[in-house]
Each structure stands twice: as structure tokens, then as C-alpha cells.
Image (cartoon, rainbow, N blue to C red; front, side, top):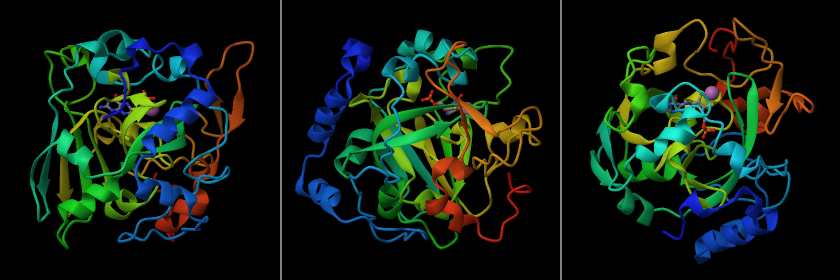
Amino acid sequence: MLIKKPDDIASSEITPEAVYLRRREFMQGAAAMAAMAVAPMAFSAPSPLSHTPVDARAGNPFYTGETQTPFSDASRYNNFYEFGTDKSDPAKYASALTVDPWSIDVEGEVDKPGKYALEDILKSVDIEERVYRLRCVEAWSMVIPWLGFPLSDLIRQWQPTSKAKYIQFETLYRPSEMRGQRSAFSTIDWPYIEGLRMDEAMHPLTLMSVGMYGRELPNQNGAPIRLVVPWKYGFKSVKSIVKIRFTERQPKTSWQGIAPREYGFYANVNPKVDHPRWSQRYERRLPSSLLSPNRIRTQMFNGYEEQVAGLYKGMNLRRYY
Ligand SMILES: Nc1nc2c(c(=O)[nH]1)N[C@H]1C(S)=C(S)[C@@H](COP(=O)(O)O)O[C@H]1N2
Ligand SMILES: [Mo]
């Protein structure tokens, strides 16, 4: 891959121009260039079997024009409980993680199960840049330029059976390198598990990310490969994935296991449904400080309502939180 290690990059170096230039490096290949040139397409209903072209203009859902959170914030203020529960723990301790070699086990209701090496996965997809809002359930948010590819590209290759209604994701379990997994006080029953309904997983906004800010993913952000589901609370965007299972039944998820009344399976960003212990009406957009808290209104489905509301038609979003 062209992606460089993030170690050597200072936040001051990440100007919008630099990001733009790096994006161009990634848009190699005629297919990617063609996709960028295609006219905007309204996709209210997901179309599982066709690619949705990416429109490069401002205002498009794949590429928000909102101010991007500096790399230094996005890589130092993290939730990755495998390395500790403090926001600064992942940046301190995730360098212990070995990310090469890496593979993903594919299991369950699928015609092509097996162990897929990350390098082979990456040869089979086109990497593109997406700039998404990320809204944590804790009421802070960022805008992050990801590098990745639609999860649907992999699902199509692996060919789920007609029984596959859900998809479950598992993070690496490796206590020797993940100090949070060794902690006696840990609340999570490792490994960290998340899940999506199949139509959510096939949605064109649902991204498998391998980089950000024009570089490889820092370990603390979920290297070498993590999920990004921009209309859901951040905890759905599971990091450092080693297993994907196709299931007939709705899978259990880690946060549901910990506090089912507080964290649901759907976890769609919704300013009208409060967390039992705090309001979800507003969010703190990073960078934020005491003097300039940068408090903004939270949008329905994190601003992706036009694209995803159709997935939940007729559902009581208060009940299925
Ligand atoms: N394996 C794993 N994935 C995880 C988490 C975690 O603790 N472990 N935290 C989640 C939460 S709560 C958020 S908000 C996002 C944060 O992603 P970021 O640190 O890249 O911003 O990762 C999510 N993915
Ligand atoms: Mo979160």
C-alpha cells in the first residue's frame, strides 16, 4: 500500500492541501477516477447489488465539507477499551499491537468462509477517501477523513447465504499486547463484539477503513482494519477486526451485554432519544475547550437521514434504540 506510517507526521503538516494531494494519490486507477466524475445520485434506498458512484462535490454525504478535526485530536482522544478506559490510554499503549500479519476469519451463513489475509483483501478492493462525522454516544464528535472501501464489496465476494440476516464483528483478543484485556477491573467480556443488520452492512455509507488523514490507521484508531458506520454512535464502529460471522439471528453485542438499557443494538444517532443518564440533543465537536466548547446540535442519524431513514421505515426508534 501507498499509505505511510502516521508516526512521522506532525499535526501542523496536515493542511487541507496536503490531505487533498494525498487523496489524489489514493484515487489511482481509472475506476476510482470515473467514480469521482459521475453525477450525483440520490440513493434513498440501498441497492445491495450495484455500486453507488461517489460524488466528489461539497454537500455530498460521502464527503462532508465541515471542518475536519485535526489529526492530533483524532489520534489522541480515543475510545479503545482494549488499551484502557482513559481517552489518552490508546495513544499511549496501542503501539504494542502487532498488526502485520493480519487476517480475517469469515464464518457462518456464507458460501465462501475461510481465513482471508488482509493483503489479499486489499488487492481486491479500491481504496477511496470518505470524510464522515463521528458521533460518540458520550456526546462528543469529530470529522474524520477516512481511507477505506465499502463493506459491501467484501460481502459480495464472500456470498452470504439466503439465511444471513445479520453480520457480527469481533475485535482481536490478545491480552499480551492489549493491556486493557489484562485488567481485573475491565467491564467488557472480551472480545469486543458488534453487529449490523445485513441491509445496514450493505449500505453504501458503511465503510471498512484502513487509513485516515492520508495515512495508515494509527493503532489507537483500530489498525489495521476497522468498521465505520457514520449514522450510528461510535461504539458500533468496531476496531481491529479479526472475525466476521454471518448469522440468521441478531447477534449479541458487547455494550448491550454491559448495559442493555443504555446501549441498544441499533444505536442510531438520535437527538430525540436521550441516553438514560444524559441528553443526546447536543454534542461537543472536537477540538473543544472550556473557552470554546464548540457545542452544536446533534442531527438525526448524524446528518445522514436522507440516506438511511428508509432502512428504519415503520420502526419505533424509541424502542429500537
Ligand atoms: N474494539 C473496540 N472498538 C471500538 C471501541 C472499543 O473500545 N473497542 N470503542 C468505540 C467507541 S465508543 C468509539 S466512539 C469509537 C472511537 O473511534 P476513534 O478512537 O477512532 O475515534 O471506536 C469504537 N470502536
Ligand atoms: Mo463512543
